[in-house]
Length: 259
Ligand code: NDP
Image (tube, rainbow, N blue to C red; front, side, top):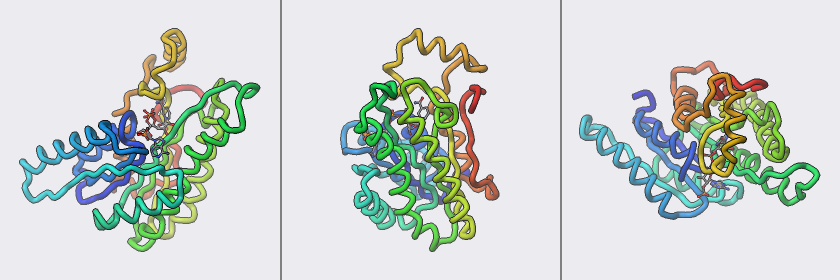
């Protein structure tokens, strides 16, 4: 198991891509601290799912001591992000990996987009990455290692109709990540971006079938990606298999153009 003895924080893991990352990490022997904005049935279900994976792993190897815990946090709020990291450090002792996955959309054409829509998406998508990175940085700096993975999007490179706010937030994540990669490299903290293409989750559930078919026809692999395919890229970047990879934008998009 390539993440054994490691602890990860994964934001926005009550469903979708975050949940898939949490499951993959758990299967690789990683302790998982994850969050959503509230403690609800979805959070409890993911917690149960992860602890079931650990029970199965521990049955094979009783020496393993791994756990998962869900936290209710708005990671775009600096005070909550700081308190979250403090609590995870108290619960788990150390954090080796941070996956900034939480994100939202609020689509509209620019001519109809309100300032509120622009601010909300920037605040959640970029603000959460800033708050969580700032919160975890002192602990990673002190321990002299860490892997931070920020979930961007191919839309942040290529742009998209009705998603100028979302595309801007995801493009900004790239600039932020590359700056952090430079600032943190001296302490062996790697910062990379995983940029999914089109992945079927609740976020994309409302897209009409005809539009989805048109998009898929433009993807060289002719299908959407799965949440697990994104999770596998995150396992690689989180692991010790790539100690010299930092400041990278890794598209997981079936070869979509412009990515
Ligand atoms: P979902 O909407 O399915 O899940 C989003 C998750 O983020 C939920 O767990 C939600 O939990 C959580 N979340 C949202 N805001 C906050 C917040 N402020 N604080 C804490 N948690 C929060 O999204 P996806 O799984 O589809 O997307 C995950 C990431 O991948 C996003 O960053 C998205 O932009 C990116 N992405 C997705 C693509 C796709 O095609 N699906 C393509 C490219 C990128 P809760 O509601 O309980 O708070």
